[in-house]
Amino acid sequence: MSFKDKIPPALREAIDLLSMIPSYGERSAGRFLYNLLKLDKEERIKIAGVIMEAVEKLRNCKECFIVTDKDLCDICGDSKRNKRFICVVEESQDAYAIEKLGRYTGVYHVLLGRISPLEGISPQDLTIDKLLERIEKYNVKEVILATNPNVEGEATANYIGGLILKRFPTVKVTRTSYGLQFGSLIELSDEVSLEKSIENRKELK
Ligand SMILES: [Zn+2]
Image (cartoon, rainbow, N blue to C red):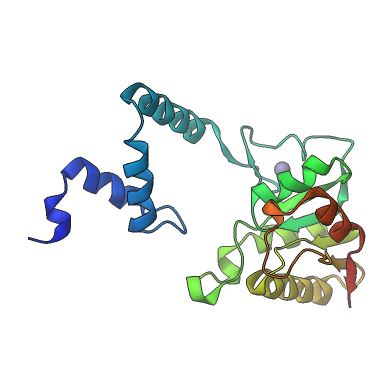
């Protein structure tokens, strides 16, 4: 009898399913559940209900892949946003962090990850094809590569930047410059550093 056979089936099943979430393993799944079970039953049911609602309502925008509750997100659907400027980010939370600054008037493109050979994530797993399609469709003027300032983010920006310049030589491709510490994450950076990193972006040639 293995350890897993000794835990209640309901718990085992929950851990197995939660482990399917990207970047979640059995340990984080277990930690989530054990901590959840410290709450009152009423609170637990409320949380489960909220997750259920989110799962039903939320999806990725068909154009930019940001998490939204519509087929086309509010940003893509806003006629005032300039579709000729695309800011490329790894995850929806990065786009929302930039959006919070209230200065950027272009649109976003969420890659849904970053190139990471260690985690088995290759360019084909990201939304790069759709990005290239949008660049062509909207005759894009500038693509701002705002992936995270760490090894994977840098590699992802270089890969995509090279691809764009090869296919669309007239498009301006820029990379956010980081006064942000190398190895940090966009979603955790303070607003001043984030704003500076976008303002001082450098052109890739
Ligand atoms: Zn969108």
